[in-house]
Length: 497
Image 1 (cartoon, helix red, strand yellow):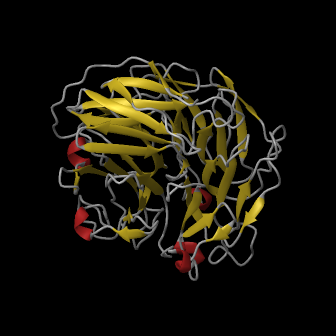
Image 2 (tube, rainbow, N blue to C red):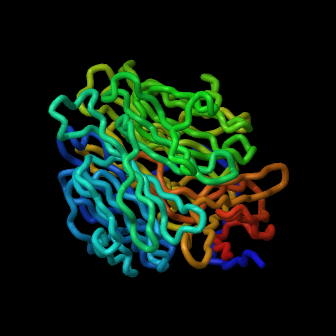
Image 3 (cartoon, one colour):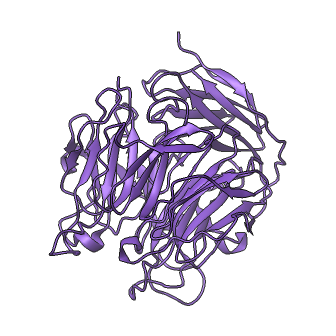
């Protein structure tokens, strides 16, 4: 018999009044952290958020480019200490997941050069595991990652996206590298399967867009280097075949940088946000598995700076949905910043904080909220760093210090849900967390991937507005459901299978 039990982890009472969002820039790190480097680090600059010591406080791993990457341990109250982690350079980003199912989160680290899988040992200690796990890290310039569990597999399937082939003498333009798929063979990884053609991937996401399994792999690509004949890609994992227009897949060509996914229409089908140079494209999911582009007046295109007099197109990188003020409507953060000195695009390019209104529009609040940094931002994360029920913000910048913002908004009620199951796929990647309250249903899919080389594996955060109680259940990766459970607002819970 399948069922879900609830483990209460504690919570805070929160006021229900809403006001304009407000963040404070904190001096939380022991020293400034900078993502640096030449053209191989024009892209990248990711951040990973996860709890690696079991205290519920999210740790933060930041890429450094030519500077060492760093793990920062969360000591509470917005105090972070440098963790004991191998001083890796060449790192573009990272994603947490429990590869071997031992209860300790591992870390997939992407690099310019050999990619590394680190086995979590507990207590925020890690050991390089490429050889032990049969993982061929390659020598490519890696800039995208996603993972999923295929039916019956003990270990996850990993996808790694690569950018320009640095060894091609005809490059860099028109010389995009191939990507790689790693399927497990028991409790090790088999040789990589080459995914070709590659069109300079900058983001990947496994998602069960049809809600019927298995997950498809969506790849967002940068037309700056593929030049022509390239497009956004969708791979069917069941037969390793690229979907085409005949399958209902609309091929578009953009300067693809990042992917964010969240159901914002209430039909349980995740919408997709694609960042780019110029328009940021929100795609609205249709019942047939296809997408319609959101109308322009929805307010998400964010194609030019909203401050200053630099009228050139913006450059979007990491995008992430999250309910900033806990009003029950997901908002959207977009990290912005010129590639380097690209004259066609804005150099004064503030980050966006787009707040969703009651009529499903999005309104800019980045400046009034205090997060409109004009550094060359890259990766980012929304995470409740101080466990007060409000999503805080981390932004990694190129050639400028990373920023940590504390969310001090007047906010409504909330709930944070973490699915758990025994055996492989302990964190239920591919599951859907469903929250039901009067007049509204909310669904979030558990995924590993997306963003701009920035990964997170934390409890799923839902804003609830004034609701004091909600019903919660999980649709597990195999399609079965737990029973609906009544839960008080302002709690963090485990739903254990």
